Image (cartoon, rainbow, N blue to C red; front, top):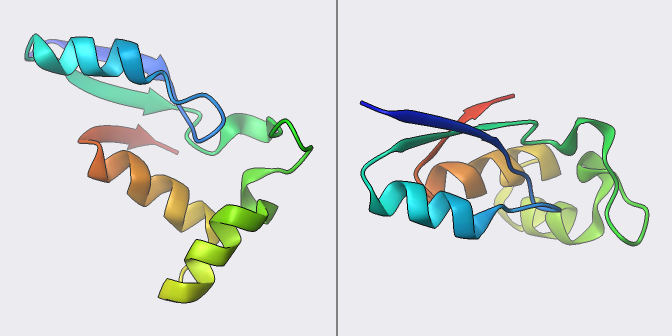
Length: 80
């Protein structure tokens, strides 16, 4: 299979490119799924992001686990 490796995380979803690649049968691999120290527009890091933390708390998971699960649900292979 053809594989496209792109940066993708909750602060930079890269959705248009991922959708296009998947539409054409490519497997998409996301690097930096935890934003490699990147911060949200409000200055949060993924492990301490209040929205991801809230979702994680409701499901007994960490914010990082929520971010990784989001990628898997999008059928994106993740390289943490």
